[in-house]
Length: 559
Ligand code: FE
Ligand code: CA
Image (cartoon, rainbow, N blue to C red; front, side, top):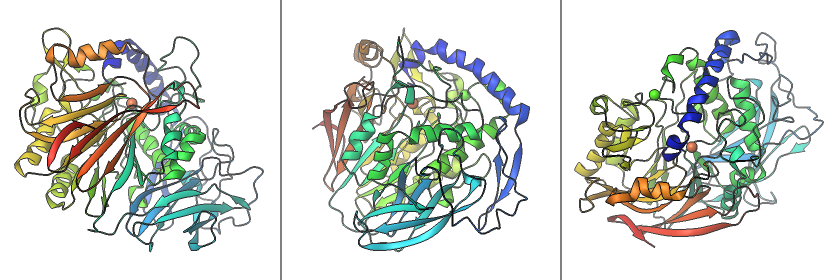
C-alpha cells in the first residue's frame, strides 16, 4: 500500500531500513561482477550473488559448445509454466524457464540446453503453424524468449515447449490486429501488486477463466521483502515467502520462481499474452532511478538494480530488445491494437527524479516546482508526447504505475499529497496533461496500479474544480493481494471528507481484485472485480462496479 498504509505502517517501513543496511553490507561483502558475452547478443554485465552461488565458468567451452540436445531430467523442468507477451500483428514472444527445483536456484546443470517450441492454431496441436529450437542458457537462468514472427494478425494460437522428453503445459496467445485495421472491440485486464504472503491469487485464477485478448501488469509483480517484513494479519499469514529479502541475483531469481510456481498465476499467463511493466517492488520500495529509498545507503544499489532487472527480464515474456545491460533496461514501449487503441507502456521508475519532497504523504515543498523534476526522464517523455501527437487510434491509453490524478489527502489544515506518485511530481504531470490539453489529444485513458484499491477518477484541467475541462479518465485497479485490513472509514475520510477531491467518481477501499476493460470505437467499459477473501485460494470473485467513458466525452460515468 502506498498511501494510507504508509501512514499506518510508517514505523514498519522505517524498520525495513535497518534490513536495508544489512543488504548493503552483503552487497559490498562479496558481490562479483562478470562480463558475459551471449552468442549473437551484445556483451553484458551480470552481477553475481554474494551468497556463494556458483558463478558460471565462462572460460569453459559450454558457451561455444553444442547445447545439450539429449538431456534427461529426474523431474519436469517446466515447473514455472509458460507465458506469452507483447503481441504484434505478425508475432508474439513465447516464454518459459527450465527449473526442476524452482525455489532453490533452478537445479539445471551449468550448460546451455536446446529447447523445442511449437505453435499451432488448435489446442491439440493437430495444425502446427510453426516450430523451432532455441537455447536456454545458464546466464539467463535457463529462460527462453522466442520472438515468433510471420503470424497472421488478430489470430489465436497455442504454444508449448519440449526438452529431454519433457513437455510443457500449453499456453494460449493472440496476435494484434493488422496496423490501422478497423477493430470492433478489445477485451483486456489490468493488474498490479501481488504480495505472496498476503493471500492467494484468486484474482489471477478468475482472470485466466476470462481468456482476455491482453493482460497488463502494471508493477509490483513481486515484492522484494523478506518473510514477515510486511505483514498485514494479526495471526498467521496465509502463506510465506521462502528465502530472505532480495539481496542478489540468485535471491531475485528464487523469488520470481516462487511466484511462478503458483498455479493461478501460471493459468493467468497461459490464458493470454501479457504486457508488463514494473513499479518499485521489483527492486526496492520507493526507489527512484539510482536513488534508494534511504539515500544514505547508495553504495551497491547499481548492482542491486541490475540483479532485479535481470531477474525480471528472465521471468517475463519480453523481447530481446528489453534485455538489460547492467543496471539499465529498455522497458517502455508501444502496443497497438489496429485503429482502436494504442497503449503507451510507461516506465515510471528507472528514469525518475528522486521524490522532490521525500517519500510519504506531505505538504508541498519548494523542490516540487523545480522544472527539472521528471517521472519518465526526458527521452521517454519526448517519446510519449510524440506518440500521442502521431496517434490515429480512437483510445490513447497510458499503461503505467502510479496514480496520475492530483489527490489531496486530508490531515490537518494543509493539503497533503502522496509523494511517490504523479502528485509528488507536479511539474512532470503538468507537462503531460498540458500537452494533452493544448494538442487536443482525444480519449486519453490512464491505467494505474500501486495503491491497492479500485478507483475511477476524472483527470481535470484544474483538479480542485469539478467544472473544469475533463482531459482524460483514470482507472485504478485494486491489488491482486497486497494490503492490510485497515478500517475503510479512514480512506473515505482522508480522500473524500470535507468535499475533498471532486475528481474522484468511484472509490472502493477493499484490497484484492483486478479490473478489466472492453473498448469499442464508441465506448469504454471498465469492470471492477473483487476477491471475497484473499486468504482462500478458491475464494469467489465478484463484479462490484462497472464504469464507462464515451469516445469524445472524457470522464467517468456510472455504467
Ligand atoms: Fe504495491
Ligand atoms: Ca527517494
